[in-house]
Length: 257
Image 1 (tube, rainbow, N blue to C red):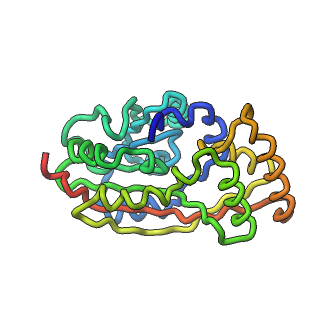
Image 2: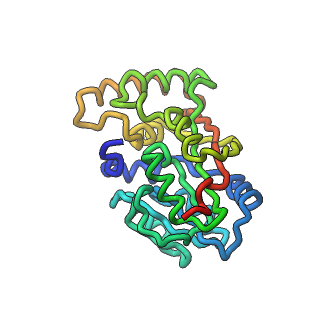
């Protein structure tokens, strides 16, 4: 995506406060399936504010966070500053700056849809050790599992600046290409967030495809958002349901540097 590394520069504060974390089952799956140990080198590509990295760091793993956006990277460094096993790197999925054959596992949380899949595949092959692993993780909002989520999706389709183009499902075709000729395994875990109206507003504004305050569609979007909230709230809250998806497998070219 053009200028994808700068899309979140004005949204860092809302991203930190209102984006969902990841269920602990993600860590358990990767531990059991990818054979990582506390001696493994793990690179979190597109590490952002550190949401995915932190669940590994809490359990004693070493994480290299690779993040191109300065604001997001600085937020991640602040959040994770008390973890001695966290290293922050200014780099991209296509040019991580990491040494050849230095990584046991590549993680990407809520980030793969911004990658140039072919160039990222080449870079992954360069930095992974032989038989290295990749795990691509998303919190995939359920689009119509409840009346609230149905109306919320309609709001994004109405007001989103380029929402249809950057929705996560647009990237899932590139996942097969990234792993080809291997095939990734998919595991899905439930996840959720509960918001009052201020939280819902912050969640909307954390997304790179929604109008910002100076945009002419911002106020109409906020009015519609308030109407949707009032229509569906229970005890002054609404619920975001997610499928946390983990696509994982051996990178097919990690032994062919």
